[in-house]
Image (cartoon, rainbow over all chains, first blue to last red; front, side, top):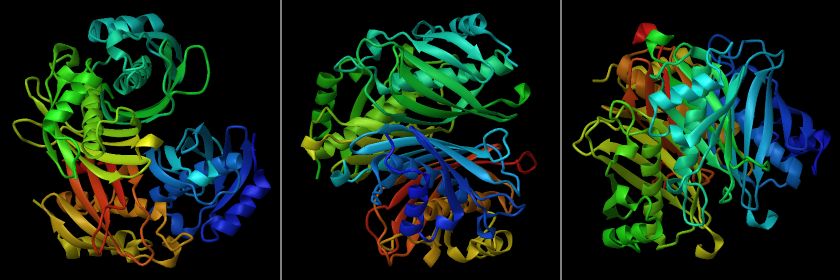
Length: 140
Length: 140
Length: 140
Length: 140
């Protein structure tokens, strides 16, 4: 059962993370995950116009974070403990990117999710990531 | 397009890897992946009767390997260069395990796949893994 | 401060994990880690006589586990939650392998260590791994 | 043998990556690695003043990249194919961060390095990462 819908997740992002909120928009919440769109800015790009690795990492990270919050409510204190990411193909310059995140485990202490990052217009995945979050005791 | 079907993958496994072939059975091949079943033996178990971490790793590893071979044919020389695995839940003692592997990238030099390991009788995933294989130049 | 020395770690291994204990020998314990030697058996080998990936994984896994126990005492219940491994070079056939593990974090709930696997006779590393263990509440 | 020293690596960073160069300074080059200092800006911080996960990722990524360039010369085309990172402790707000990167493998097609991120003033590591880069054929 989800605790937060698309509108609440976007509001939370704006309040808790004003520095990065303009980059990301949640556009779907399902039973086991979320979809987050990256709105690239100049600072995200590398020579050739492709989105940088750290930006893809940030997109994957926020997507799993929001997938957790969708289930347990607006708890700002979950922290990433581990991440693994495979960069599969270079994103094209003018492409919006979509992170499709799903929760694989939501335990009392740890949550694990994985993410595929795909071009908005379709096609093979650009990156794959998996992330572990530690959930603080009081929220368990 | 696949180059090897279920029967050919199982034959290849027996010929090329006789030491581990009895542990694994390919049971499905699709356009983008394979399903491999682990047949646990005493040596795979840990105290409490659960399947060991290295055995789950071996299952994920062989599943992505076979997903690559299904697409490029019986090339024994692809080697794992990187693997990342999340252990999500303890497998129950008497449970058959199924690895659902899909190829995310099949390039000339690198192939990347991910895997969910689930109990045969259904239920939440027990482990998640992603693996990169280096493909030798002559087979590219 | 360490709680277990080389002799006690080897005894623990034999009692708690009789199935794998013959494969591994702890040979050094320091303030921040351990050294574990793999004694390869036929079952660990692949075509060409090299040690298999899952065997290297098992070696890295047990080395970090023992590095944790060396510090917190003989607690059999810590479980691996995440592992990442890079296979750098093929081990030569007749080479003993040494895992050099060090603890990077020993928290109440999570411990993280990394490992270099090197040939006994010296030379560049064969594999690198990092592992996270979840430590059960009662032992914290 | 290194091909680029501290001054040349810093110049390369400014020319090839003007958007991120102000954040990073190379301060040491050795036979097997480099040290890179992060100069945090407002955009790198999260609530509480700690440096964000994606910023730590970017620091680890650039450090291994520069460790490779130090050895093979100013080749702008190596690309990250895989990264794994463990976040061990929260960085304190006003702390400069140092990435200590070492190359574990420098092959014709793949290079692998790992990184410890530590506070400038000393103390236990804040993060650990390992990264794989694909090296384009013409530079091999």
